[in-house]
Length: 196
Image (cartoon, rainbow, N blue to C red; front, side, top):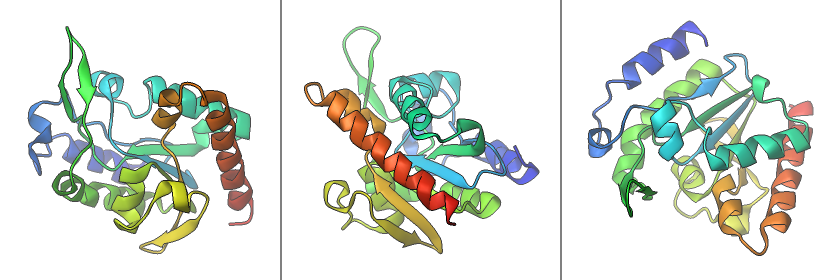
């Protein structure tokens, strides 16, 4: 990690810009190569990410990394992050913590961290994973189902729109079909990186 990213991570560790920090175990900042030309941006850390302090290490992260491998994208040359840096949850049965979608206020409170990561990293391409991430960067009119595969501008950075890998977990009957479509999206990302 570069000095500027390490400094940002240290600053974010004490972030109290919105109330989400009160129930989270820790801030989950971005991770990956400081020389990455590709940045993957999701919604927020999940339960495993909150416990481990790393992005995309839970079930959705396993699907993401598997699809990256199938598409020929090296995770060691990628930077992983989320728009929101704290896990928003509600109690489930027993010890379970159930994911809750962050609201606009919480997303906006966290957006300066993503913008600072972009400035420090200057990636050639961003992949927006899911509606929350894409709408945070590209505006509320974005619909992943309608805009999937498009590349739009966010502050001078191109953003490729696709689903969040957690949606593949929820697609029980069509899971394999959704997974193959996700690989196709990431393959398109790889081709675009070659020409950027």
